[in-house]
Length: 180
Image (cartoon, rainbow, N blue to C red; front, side):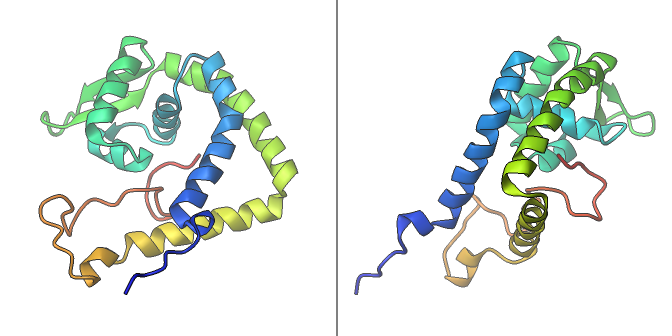
């Protein structure tokens, strides 16, 4: 028996991607104006909320894979927008922080970002936007705190998806991490 898939237009992953793209389309011109990519902005924004953070924690907070984040950090470091330092208490730990130049860039680009946010809020409605953000945070928490659904289907996940994989996605309210 052939299972009938839901309509493609009702695919949750595609709906989320389309909404993300619609929102990011508003921010990209500003980021381009300031010479930074979406991923670089995400890293810099995350760093504004902490004094310093380990690379793997930063990867988790920004939803970036560690190898990608390493390349992004290298570029940001070359532009003197971030700093690396070793932890005084544990010389094996490398910490990342935003530099004074990075803060200046955030201040400059942040003005544009807040204007864009204000217009998105005006178009969509402050209450609806708040509800949407709450719903997305709840969806993230429910999906992140539950076992993979694939496990309930009896799929062999092998080594590709460890059962104890680190949590990805936006930090929870209790986490000491970042918000956009």
